[in-house]
Amino acid sequence: MSAINRMDNPVCPASPDEATLADAEVLECPYPTYSLLREQAPVFQDPRTGIWVITRYEDLRMVCLDTERFSNHRPSNDHAKLTGNARKAYELFLEKGWVPGESLAARDDPEHKQMRAIFDAAFRPKRIKALDGEVKVLAYELINAFIDDGHCNFVKQFAVPLPLIIICRQMGATEEDIWQIKAWTDAWYRGRGFDLSEAEVIWATEMEIQAQHYFQPIFERLRRAPDGTLLSDLVNTPVPGWGRTLSDNELHAEMMQDTFVGGSETTTNALSAGIMLLARNPGVWEQLKADPDKHLRTFCEEVVRLESPVQGLTRTAKTDITLHGVTIPKGAVIDARFAAGNRDPAQFERPDDVELERRNAASHLGYSSGTHYCLGAPLARRELYWGFKAFIDNVEDFRLTPGRNDLRHYPNYGLRALNELHIEFTVRADRRSVG
Image (cartoon, rainbow, N blue to C red):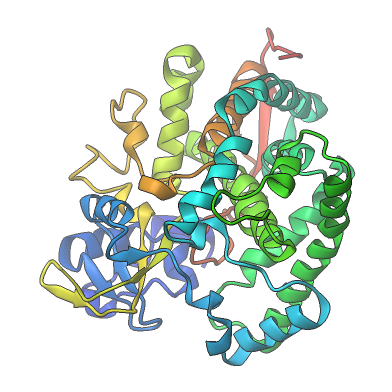
């Protein structure tokens, strides 16, 4: 079934007994399943994975804020307990690369607070604000590269390079290598799907090891000669209370998980989702185009709310937890399904609609909440704003290119990413060729 038909005719389980999220066709359009679970099974154990799924907004906020009962620790970091394909991947890292250490996102306090201090310093508001002009100029340059063609693959020609080039500049990578880095980040999240074969896991692991060998010399160079970049700060700043800087293993985990996947893939997916939403909602496009100064920031929040580039993140129960009459046992893996909470009618009126007048649009959980609130959110918001602004300033009207799109997403449990997005457009007579 094509993605267009799947969006029009999504999987709609009749009851929680028929529900699962570990299915590519469900994930292609998960919103009916989310709705069912919110209403009938807000604490749901997925029969295919055993993971406990939480879907209501108020409960998700509680999970994010309650660090006494919910841990960010991930079982994949318990190396001695790994079996099967996970064990094979671990042994491959030992043999050829660096076993990724615990990332910032996978730590609890006090280690999380201590480690986050160096990230807070590296991502300090003054530094991120200074990137604003750089993001703006790059957005218009990327648009200028294809605007005269009258068509583009928006994912490849704009949504991927905008955030990836920005993060490459801060992480010591060259812009000429963005497509190699993109291949590594693709492999990282594809390698974390369900029901992967041994060959698929080995391929994804070897791709990550390639990335490690690309960045290791950069770490070593920055230790010898700090250069004031974001990565230089992360490499050379001692972690408070640790008496040391981050190890190579920890740096490699941060580079792949939190920096390049978290710092580029999510914005790429939001940019693509935003253009898809505008194509499906021409009235919203006209309203946005008529007054971007009034509506654009809310539109950026609505994109993240509605399409949730990060659909959910896991927690581990530190004790038995009873919620809505259901007991989640100690040690269970919990999926905090932010995408479901972001369409909760108890929090958002007309939750499935793009509403440019929505007053609480920014209260979505697309960047998580609490102590693990996304460090990169301020930069992501700048990239979304200037990405869409450059598009509005140059495009009079557009449509999805007939016969070129299936609108399929990569079948991934955690991330929502369009494969491609072909559009054709007419150019504004008063288009802005520079930012």
